[in-house]
Amino acid sequence: MIADRFDVFLFDLDGVIYLGERLLPEVRSAVSRLQSMGKTVRFLTNDPRPTRAQVTERLRALGLEIRKEQVFTSAWATVQYLKKRSVDSVFVLGTPAFLDELRAELSGVSVSGDDRPQAVVVGYDDAVTFREVQQAVRFIESGADFIATNGEPSFPTPEGKGLATGSLVRAIQEATGKRPCIIGKPSPIIFRMALEDVPKDARVVMIGDSPETDILGAHQMGLTAILVSEKSIRFPFEYDFRSPDAVISDLSSLFDSEKRVREWRPPPFLWPERLEPGVAAVVLNAPGDVLLVKRRDNGLWGLPSGHVERGETVAEAVKREVREETGLDVEVERLIGVYSDPASQVFHYPSGEVVQFVTLSFLCRVVGGTLCADGVESSEVKFFKPSELPHDILTMHPLWLKDAQADRPQAFIR
Image (cartoon, rainbow, N blue to C red):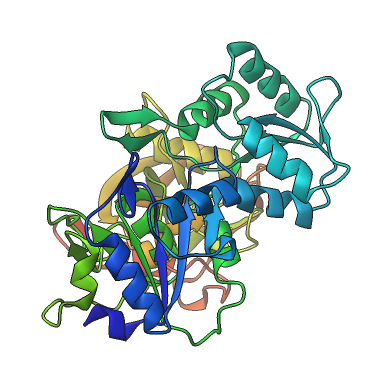
């Protein structure tokens, strides 16, 4: 049974342990049985409104025998994050309980909207005003760190979805153009805090009701993840990080000898936030040498490549990229192929964004211009013999060159 396979059980709260004020079926007996088996049981919630102590008291009132140290809220984790970075002044959008916990954990911290704070912390409170949101925007624009307790735009209630922190976060992000540091699930930050004292060889499982936070977050940490749902949920691709390793209707299934759970094996790429169309150019000169640029962002050689801009055809995009990166004007002769290998085409940018590219590679010929680097994206530009490519070249680019040289009647897909 599932309960025998793991040493540590991480539970989401809303939708898994309780819904509104109601304890969900089989929860009390399941948690009690796990603890009697010597299992480590912990609770992770993205709800930033209550303190850790308040959540503990609520669970005890529902009949669960737990300690405060077993509870990890996104608000508490945010306070620990601030403490580790010695933040001494903050502007907070959050409940009075959140502010109390902040002051208790960070003695001497200045919580004010009058001075220029070191950080802006976005949590949630029904009483947050538009004026306070506007003040948060101005502080972030002035250089304050942008920190969010969590990013969920809604949470489950007996009446349906309720507005959550992510709605405020997205409004501020749109206004500032800045990405927040998110502490709660699916961010690894709260998972690391919850597992800080757990032995490295412990077998850990996350049990939640949200593929987008609980399952995704666990899988990004390399953990097995179980979804609590009445419906079987699967995404199209087996390596989709949001696909649960098992689906159960309630926690009694943890003790069902017939219930199976797969072991999550992380694929060799990060989970991309979005897909981006891209283009690449194989530019050959008369002797058959290939044009490469050395990129400033990573110091690697590669074919001229980049994004497709809005309102631009792929042919226009590849010609623009070659001109911007090398100074040469080219004409497109044919499409070589369409490529999207996550292991080599998922990129993690300094901003924290993770993007997967679907790249259309084109064979091109030079029709004008002067060879030079643009000084922004590329630091060096030159032609190489295909048999003498530099060793520090982007992974997929030799394949694109090989496919360009192959005698194939039509473009193909990889």
